[in-house]
Image (cartoon, rainbow, N blue to C red; front, side, top):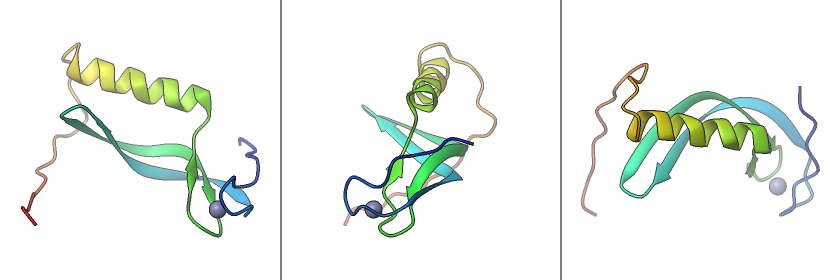
Length: 81
Ligand SMILES: [Zn+2]
């Protein structure tokens, strides 16, 4: 368990949860499941430790630059609004 500082936006208490995170960079989208994150109980702002950020970067790099097979490929609908 990681302990997080209070929320920098609202001062609320931040607790660790495992979340799904849509990681976008350039034209790519990678859905990361079960990511440990600090989530503000009041406003929902999310915080990641530097280790988790590094692992998310590594996953992105593995999938899009090293052609590693993902666990699943999703169909994502898109709408012009
Ligand atoms: Zn907050």
